[in-house]
Image (cartoon, rainbow, N blue to C red):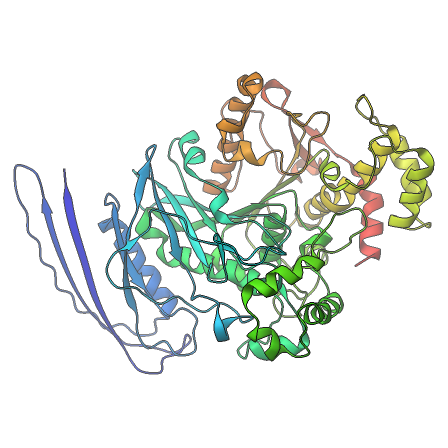
Length: 585
């Protein structure tokens, strides 16, 4: 059956409308449909409506839902856009996208969700996108956002606010949606590095995947009191990348129905800085209307998720110095390549001694009112989102390049005192010297102690503390990823990501018999969490909430029959880190 569908809408809105004002609408719609069957059908529909007390976001959402029915089986996707959340919402626009199909999954790439943040829009919150004429080719990826320290290149651009949609060919408008926020220390990475096709196929075509770009480094997270005037409506600063992510969620909420997704079931998930970002959205009330659940891989409620304004001001001065500027006007006039290259001097080198990441979002008092860990402790987070989060056994091994694997006891003591303070080092050593570690050639016990302390301070214990603080408010599921892959003896930072995205081409032949079923189980857990807020997988143990019967339950993931639920994981160690972390906020 072949079909050609055209959808034309004309929207007339009263002038100078604002988001909160009442509006009247006159809508004219025509639809023609021809089918290559034993019969031909021609249908014409004319509709006139008068609506009042309707916000622009509600309008856009209802239209998107209607389009999802009309276009669910078409390669050509059309819809209605609007000037969302803007000061002067005077007109809407229509859009059409031409996508492609791979392995039973349709894809629409390089779709703009915001206006290009260039010129006067640099170092401002994102603005809504405009429309385009005709059909937009959405079959190839766009540019990465500027990468910290790299300067200009053929694959990066300041004009980078685009998203990519992967949807089953049978999507019918009711499937859950998962929006992936990439990691990279808030200074690198891109949504184009992650293809949702294999993940969708592994779960029986039961959900959609959206990957997004967001501004990085100086373009996304330069903060200062002197920048607040760049946001006259809200007075925020230093959170442009976080606001980009939210703008993408707004676009998804309004338009995903056209691609077969359910706008009422949009989850966000990410790893590393992507998980830190999900943490921030859980803590930022402005984001709450646009997602239902949050899944965080290695980055939940860590101090690395955001930075205080005092650090932002220091970095602002350093950034101006690096580009030979004395004022903001000079920075706005520099070309993107110069800015990006110069910021290599503020790159994030490691996690051994860093309490904060330099390019993390700012605790500006508006977007982020306080460190997310403190907001979680006070119960001031998303009021209804379910949370699934976890950590890998040896996250610290990825960030301990400065420590030799044969670290001596004397060097360990020097490291502990310098990194954690002489008041804490003796207790820390006593706790970690009492733990059991793998037997590995050329890896000393002193190294294991240092590495696991990094893991627990930055990843494991912020996750556990987040679970403790939220268990009586939200449904919280916690995991400990302990599958030892080719990186043996370490279960390092990001080890689970190739399995989550079912990147089977990266699985060593010697491990495919274990890793393919493990990847499928992870995807089943993730997909059912996106759909219902609870992780379920065929043949897997029951996964209770963290607070079930007060047991502090954690799913330990090792693959196959080795997967099991364990209570009170790292409890004593995290009691120590709770004291240390709260003292350093």
